[in-house]
Image (cartoon, rainbow, N blue to C red; front, side, top):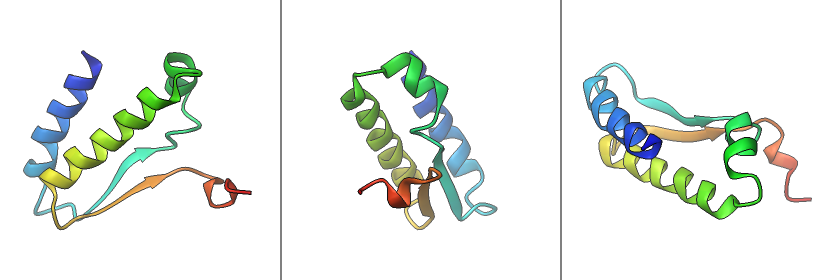
Length: 79
């Protein structure tokens, strides 16, 4: 599945670059993504779970790295 390929990629790439990369953008523009809109549409819970699982996988592989999600405009989304 795409989810497994993503997690396998994280498991391979993050440890391989641990001495070069200390900051990771876990997901760029996760809520403006066309993938989000087309694949998940109204089923946001499944997408949110994917983001949470991705973050946890990144943290497992990079326990001391700075991890963040980058999504433009979200700083005002709680209005």
